[in-house]
Amino acid sequence: MIPKDASGIKVIIRPNSKKAEFLGFDEARQAYRVAVKAEPEKGKANAELLKFLKKSTGRDARIVSGKTARSKIIRFDD
Image (cartoon, rainbow, N blue to C red):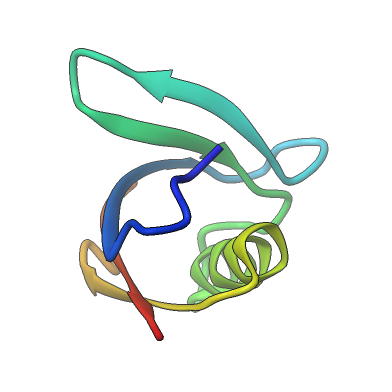
């Protein structure tokens, strides 16, 4: 779902979901929607998001903006 050559993406996260999955692409906000099972407490949802992205893309990622918000900017490390 995420282009392999993307160096960064915008993500809108939905915590407390039944499972971690891509929900689609929000054209209006130009962001991927991602659901995660973890609660938005003490960085749990962020950690699960990064783990999910690693599993989905095979690349390490880090949050560069939005650590306490639902809307985040993610950069991939090559």
